[in-house]
Image (cartoon, rainbow, N blue to C red; front, side):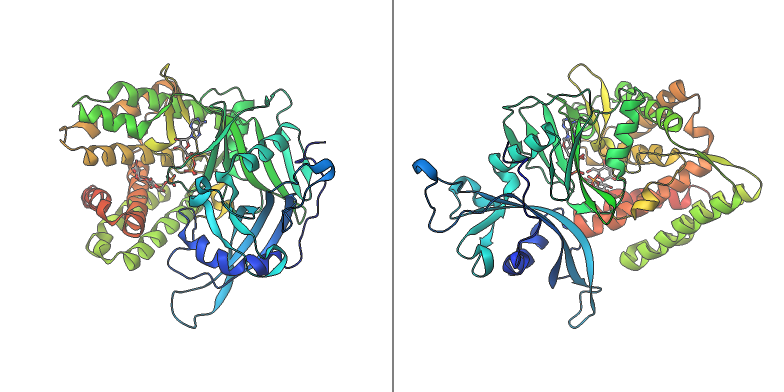
Length: 476
Ligand SMILES: Nc1ncnc2c1ncn2[C@@H]1O[C@H](COP(=O)(O)OP(=O)(O)O)[C@@H](O)[C@H]1O
Ligand SMILES: O=P(O)(O)O[C@H]1O[C@H](CO)[C@@H](O[C@H]2O[C@H](CO)[C@@H](O)[C@H](O)[C@H]2O)[C@H](O)[C@H]1O
């Protein structure tokens, strides 16, 4: 029986207490930590699974003189407690749940220095060093082996599509790019995305690619296997394994490369429009669609107005544009009041150039169907007008044009037109024939981007702000 398939204990008394002070320091420094700006004041354990038993001190010899494993491995789901606001004495509450893979060693070899969480001084792991085990080959192999063998370990469930095989001996490497989650590439054959912030229920990052692949849509890397936790009778999606598109370039990189050469991007933008329409058409066939009448539209518009108001509070530079931006939303409500209806369906939910991969043979795939992670899961899984994704891509062309070292006049406009034409060729619907909905979603996205940039990349703030200026006056 492989180590990964060995049934193990699902909790180790005192484990979390001994890690607590180290995690309080380490967790907020991670790129994927969603509660930035507020301290972590404690943790509660959602689930703990021992995947490899921890080394004993001093490291003993096993039977026949063979050394016993020097690596322990825990899979943890922990809820971080944080104050509601970053003020001293503010009431705290259990917040987001995070997935951690904790490696335990007596000492960390230098190659694992970037993975260090800290040295444990108390409790069952006292005297050992703990670290983010995804940086280490052996723990990453344990996960792949569990997926390959469809293991069940404690509450962890490793599933695989019945017609998909995973061969052994694939060498893992952690992707080090700054991301919302953590991904490990295995021998350039598979990529395992481990979700970091975990929510109960079906996650669209598995649900949608699986539905698309099963419907025969070739525009997504088809999930090969996935990992869930069975908690309180519900599956919590923890990770998805997909084929790795070797030599792929993402749309953002490609667009910037073409811009630097002064080239237009129309042919690729058209292909991206076609790919988006293929995905939308397949999603509309595979999953429910609904008709949005006035009352549903009103709710949608109210959501947009609320986000605008919250954004104005968070980023006051938006204030002078608020009336113009609001008019983009009320125009939509007016159209609905006249009896206009729209079809809503499952969509990508956070589409931009960085979410599109082009293979060396020129085929486009869409990835990362998680939606906007900050929004509640139920909202992310609701049918929505497909124009939402289109607006996301149009914003992305605008971002690329603004990021060019030497601007190419008309570049974004050409991309927009080509993308919409490509979309119309496949779907039969040109998004430009629905300008009120398009403006409303572009406005909503630009406002989101203003908040995102103010929080994460203040140097980029002028990019969405220039769109805000344009969109605030577009209806006047
Ligand atoms: N199937 C794939 N083949 C090749 N590279 C991929 C694949 N899926 C994701 N990637 C790479 O991994 C990066 C992160 O993936 P993504 O799903 O966007 O994760 P995150 O939610 O962490 O941002 C992508 O930008 C892309 O470079
Ligand atoms: O990468 P995520 O899916 O987590 O998305 C977040 O980060 C994106 C930036 O990395 C941000 O996208 C914005 O910047 C992009 C260029 O870097 C641009 O192509 C997008 O159009 C623009 O929205 C995204 O908004 C945010 O959710």
